[in-house]
Length: 264
Length: 265
Image 1 (cartoon, one colour):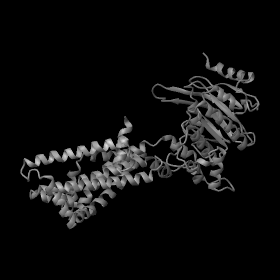
Image 2: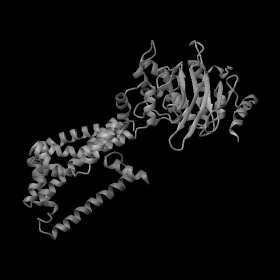
Image 3: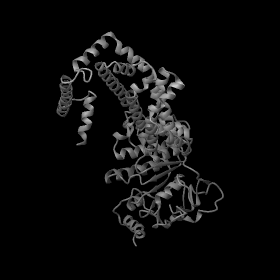
Image 4: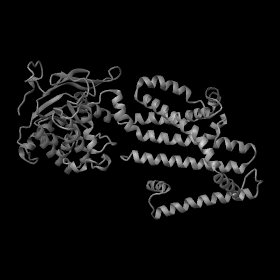
């Protein structure tokens, strides 16, 4: 999937529009006193159905970028367009998965998944119950439908979070370090599951992480941000067949190439 | 050993028995017995009006329970306790949620609240009488003043404590209006604080019963006060105990409901 990033601007027909267009996005905090530039002209696009990871050293503003794309923070300059429309707030076209799951603790796994369905209704031809059950099955938690979040493990909670985001069938899934607090084994199995879900549903996934190996394992392309102020250092085309072997020479080579940007 | 306090608490609620519980129970029972013994010894060396002995108090209790007077007085007190608690808590929670949620409410309602807050609740007694009369109305007013503040602050704190990520997720899942967010995220998220505030308020409402009934409403507090005027100190102590029991009953009842409703905690 070699997509170069020269098509970020001035698109005309809807067909060749990128799904997510991050157009020279900047963010300056506290502009009156000591201004801190978190993001400086970040510019790239994500195609429909693509899996893109954003990596960068801590403090590079990748979480800020995530929040801007999600519509939770306004950029100071530039804009983000989703399917051609400028983002002005969070919405059901972009499902969100956070690092600390952010499940509603007063709702069971099943009722967490139905939350969005209660708001926007199930997708065409499906019922709320059928859809919710199917999404829980998809993440392998069918039998935990009636469990409250506090009784679930970290990995299970993240799975519920993914099912909840998928339930309203958003074309885009935004994930902010969703597996960062999980142990290695759980993380690895969730990587496989996420790729299966991605293949099955054809979602566009934008995945923020500080874990370079995770990014190279998952993504079609890896967007590497520079240290503060964050801007795009390089967009690395992974170009390896899936499932990927984390120890293979080509994999390590791509990983090394990304890591080069982390060294000063 | 933080776990021990928790277990002691469980014991008081009457669930679960193990060795630790048995030891805790022995300590509690021992303390109560020692308390009564000290009281009794004190009563032996004082005139009965200064400190009546436990048997005298027990006699009053037995007599008033058999005659049904305790229940009649409790009923009278409930006639202003319940409406006062419900109205005060409802208004307190409403104002607290609003101030915790909206900047505008914080600047308006919150500011007025800060001015009114330092007024001792008992200072409202004259207005309780003038506005609502020397009856249940005036007493209910005082109870609602006391319960308003408790529920107001716990609701405000509870709302501020709701995880902002939950609000963001809710927005991404299609909850757009303020009212929707309050109903579907803020109130359930703040529910533990709302319950705790209500429980504290229900307890405090009993604590102020004597003062509230000074406005002329009949009930336990009034009865206690009349007894004091006749120096019937045995009756005074008897009704102190009655208020204590009512407090405990109310508290346990609300806790029971809380555990039913907030199973997710």
